[in-house]
Length: 269
Ligand SMILES: [Zn+2]
Image 1 (tube, rainbow, N blue to C red):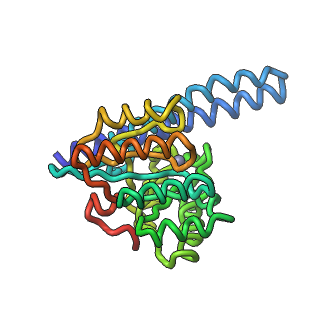
Image 2: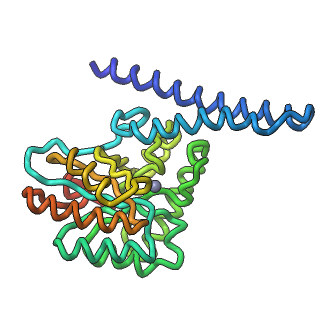
Image 3: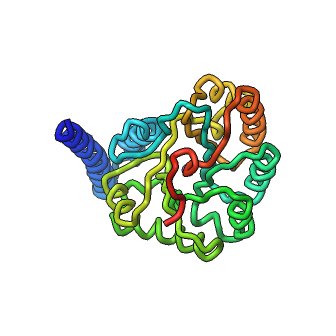
């Protein structure tokens, strides 16, 4: 059984590596053709579209443990769910999320991007003093993060870890990969640095939804004990959807906690 699941995983690893390598080879060949034969750079759109589709698929499939075991929910019967907010700290929206959570006595986990911390140190500090937890969401959140070496990914994690440590005096243990894409290198880097990879099983699509109602309806349809909900503290729609979700949770007897509380693990090293 164990052996089966390991070999199953390795097949997927090869699939990812070959996707990435094919993409790199395709863009190199097209680059050479452009340089030496003047072929149109529009050809680059084709491998890019294929690669983008792969990224989108990867984002949607973090729950399938495609490359790395990611924890995406808790196996519990009691009505408890965790909220997570990615891509902050954000000067405008993070404080609004914090005051909304305080109104409802709810806790959450914020997966922060290292480069967004500069200038928003007080916002980051407030997340911690309000009793919420902070997780790592890489330094650059670059579209190209998939192509980084193990060392490059370790640098991404360490840079953000250092910034957070300098402000709150704690070393993060939770890591949410950018775009939810997990690669073999990313698995290695997070293991070497003792991170626990956290996914989600309810995606609010709050960055692309047309209204707060759409976001709330989607969440209401999927809500269940042990769920981890993915939000982004980057827009007004999220604030509205958060209020509606918190009302819905309250009316339906759901307790809202942070990720480590839901999973009964430590948020810091
Ligand atoms: Zn993100």
